[in-house]
Image (cartoon, rainbow, N blue to C red; front, side, top):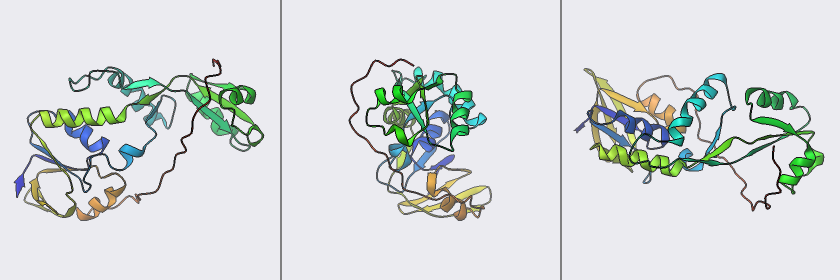
Length: 233
C-alpha cells in the first residue's frame, strides 16, 4: 500500500498538467493504464489554439491561456509553445448561421471569397461550398513539449508517474480512498479522475453517476500543402 496525498488517474494533458501545478509539498502520484504517457487524446488532438472557438466559458479559458502558452512560467518550459497557423473555414449550404457565429465571436476571423480560398488551397472543390472565412490569428500548440515539460516539473518536485497501472477498484473508508491497481494499491484522501474518455469507468468504481463519456475514433487527413500563395486576410 502506497500512501499519497493526491492520486491522479490519467497521464494525459489534464492529469499531468494538474499534477505539475500542485508543485512541491503534497505527495502526488499519477497512474495510467497505458505504458506511455499521453497515449490517447493528448497525442491525437488537433493541437490548435483558436480564440473565438466554442462557448463563452471555453473562449474565456482559451483567452486566459495565451500568456501561459506564449511565455510558460516554469523553468522546464523555456520557449513559446505557439506557432502561427491560419484556419480556413468552408461553409456548406445550410451552415451559414454557424459560420456567422465564428465570424462574430472572433475578430480575427473574416469572410473571404471562394476564389481567395481556392488560391490558398487549390484542391478545394468550390462547387461544394457557398461561403468561406479565414482566421489569421490561430496557432499550433506544441502539446508534446507542454506535456513533457509538465512531466519533468512534476518529477522534479519529487513525485512519480506509474505507467501500465490500470485502476481496478476503489473504496472510500474513514476519509481515504483505497485504490486497487494492476501494479499495487494506493491510499489517498483525494483522487482526481483525469481518465479522459474512460472517466466514466473510474466514476463507476467510485460509485458515482457516469456522464455518458465514450472513447471514439477520430480521424485527420494530412497532405502536402501548396506553396503559400501570398494571400493576406
